[in-house]
Amino acid sequence: MLRRWIIGLSALLVSAFACLPSLGTDQSLSQSWVGELKIGEIKYFVQLRLSGGGEPTAGTIDFPASGRADIPLSDVSVVPGHVRFAWTDDAGQTSFEGSLSAGLLEGTVREGNKQGTLQLAPTVSLSAEAQLRLIGDYEMRPGKFLSVSSFPVGLVYLDYSTGQAGVLFPSSQNTFFAGPAFQVPVPVAINCRLSADPVGNLTALHWQDKAGRQIGRKLDLRREEVTFQDGDVVLSGTLVLPSGKGPHPAIVRIHGSGAQTRRNKFDGWYAYHGIAYLSFDKRGAGKSTGDWREAGISELADDVLAGVRFLRQRKDIDPDQIGIEGDSEGGWIAPVVATRDPRIKFIVTVAGPALDYVPELMNEVEEGVKARGLVGDDLKKALEFKQKAVQMTADGAGLSDDAWAKFQTFVAPYRSEKWFSYVSEPKERGRGQKKLYLMARIRSSEFWRQVRIPVLALYGGKDLNVPAAKNVAALTQEMKEAGNHDYTIKLFPDANHDGLETSNAMLDNEQVRYLQRHVPGYFDTQLSWVLSHVTKAR
Image (cartoon, rainbow, N blue to C red; front, side, top):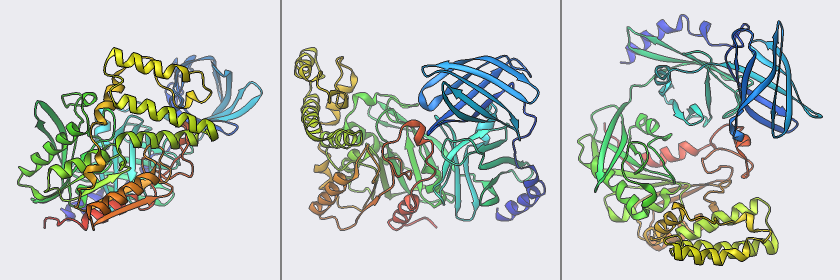
């Protein structure tokens, strides 16, 4: 196999870097563009669509990260060497005048008495077939692993060696570019393209960035669509397997909150290093039946246990080397799974709560309102109110009309307080109140105190979803009370909830786009710890 790859690579090298994608100088304006609008210190992600042929007369502009879309353009003018258009939104009218330069559309914007810049790169609509060709796992060199996955923001690459991640924007059906940060398309910092060797049945990713040029081969990792059941609930997922017959150690992923699917950033990476990985659509999400909104910690734990039982029935999985990985909300579920199944090999949690459900909700509220600037007596009063409101909801305030009416009577006097907007409660009853009630039925701390298997827990110092300090203290105490002598708690001071490196915990959607990488050690810590706790198949 290695010899076949070398032969195929030699053939691809002949034209590889001579054909690396670049943004041409004669791009037609009758297409889509992505880029950056900068006015003062404010930066916006922009999508521009022009229509009307080679000399467009209309179009729209979007600001996806700010939630503004389909804003019509006016005064569209295209003459040789010059482009002009305008748009009107809540900020008033903004005008642009610019030109094409090295394939980019760039120029000056004016918004009232303010002035800024707009720089755009051309992009195309990618076909489903082209997306499937690009999505996958690549070995850039032995030990250097890169993946491309589909996320709501687009196709996202992840370099597991550097932790760098970003959106790849298509410039054709097989060429792509990325900017200097996660969802910042310009200035262009990365060019890449796919090529195929039909004789060797090989696909190569030609990659060029500031570090230089490299070619990676697309890995043919085994991905199986699987289903298993927890009672009447049918759970659908994907099992990614390492090369070889096995039996392999394995990990079952436990979801974060909400309608989470099997999508994740770990499966191919673990399989590349010899560990099978099962991820599945949460009940009621993706292709799984049931309804996650009607399930508490206990029911969600049973879904994970069904996945563990499914793996133990397979000859290519070692039944005594199955661990679980809990992401965010999964931190409440993981200890329940482990105490119900003593054969679970280990637990990894990533930004997973060790506090019980209501205390963790209050932990999140407190750190969030502090970060937004609430202080002093207002902070104290707001937290006292919210504690009572959350506890009432956990006790069933949202389960009936009568209970909800009493809850509203409690809330009413506080609605006029100046701090209420920081900790507001809805007037209308929804499914969220019942979900809170269901999740609060189990105290996960009681289960953590029974966990004696190896545990790795990662936290971020800039995480406002699961603030680290109280959870680190809680888990440390729970592990001591359990008599657990093999646990590792790692705090990354500059990591947010997703493990991305940041100096600021309070970022809006436009600012988050400028994050560049996962904190150093984020992936290596997990991999080295897991590998030290399993025996891989030979």
